[in-house]
Picture 1 (cartoon, rainbow, N blue to C red):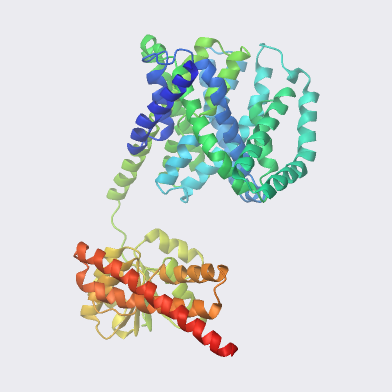
Picture 2: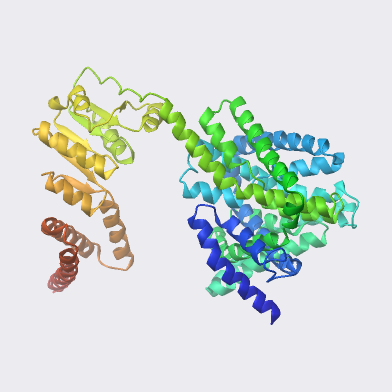
Length: 594
């Protein structure tokens, strides 16, 4: 009963506090750590023995490594080989060497300093990747570099867990007989994949989500326990299980089945770490703990920044990469615990380092904010880039906005042999497109002088493919006013955008998602065994009705009440129209059969 009460308290505390941290931009990891510190033995003492919870919560790390293994398809790893095994390996070596040197200077033994340096060189995958995803920066150059480095670090955890006993003199392990663990690993690698695929095919025939989830958990825990029996770590077993299933047809379903358990147990793990974090050390040794935290962040920042610059990275990108990965990682909590068990580190040393890692993770959001401030400061110092000089010859078509939509139009025009002038206000997009051999000019289509320079007066068609709604409407108004003879073909983001374009008298406009949505609806109806001829009629009538409704609602767009009423009436009209189409088709089919 006491355990159930504790578990309920943990869930309640996490539900109350973790969303606050996420909303503040601090991330869920820090939220779980803070909750653990709050309710643990160094906080309000709601939980006084976090060790029992830690044994269960460590399954979260085990499941995390299983998911990492699932992502390691050989083809994907091969495509990323240079970044992962090049930049990732160099970062680990550089940061670990510098941190180990710092450990030696502070009085650690050579073996302890080497191990501490390697552990502290790891950064937080659980914090960095979700944060970059929320900031929409995973696709940037520094975001891709961060992913590659974190992937190499996650791969490094596996051999590191196996090698820790060799650094110390603690409890005996089957690693003193390395042939046992190696033999288990070889056997699993040879026969694991066909056996696991056969198991999941058997379970898939039952068509039970619960059984599939149970099979996934049994696979992970079974291989984890098998590796542990062979003297290796449970995490290694989970990782091997993931790798064996990386190319399996069940990979995505496995990931979806494991995800809820992984997230919950990983949250419990971070809470358990927070409970185990000895906050009294911060009170007893404030300068030492804060100094070590500052030293860790500074060393990791300087080594990674210097390495990225040495390899030709741009200053701003190298700085953001170094700031993003300057903290310690979640695997440090597991590794420091293992280092203490094997007497590589003393209990106080391990507790101090665990606290330092937790504090370094706590300052990570602040580091990213500093990075954003420096980016804005650099941008403010640089004079605005002048617009490109426009071509001397006029074109039949001018395309404003050369992103995903404008490029498709441009490619078709090129294939036809039609000259066009493409404009885009995003300098990075312009440089990217130019690398692929397409000619595009940097400039703002909402600038009248630029439109004159682009010789829009001589053009026949103006393709308005600008992504931003406000910029699109400004440009449309400018072209309609000063170049009324030029025909406009416009891209609309949504119904509101389409309505505003219609207000400007632009009839040739299309919502960007409409054609693909109609095609998806067509496929769906056909998969529901509707006759293709009837599907064509239904889609045609839908398009005609949708255009009529859009024109009707244009006059009441600013009255929400009338818009809601009109939309409801339109749904009833559409249902009646499609039912009439079905009845007419059925009547025609019966007539044909007679």
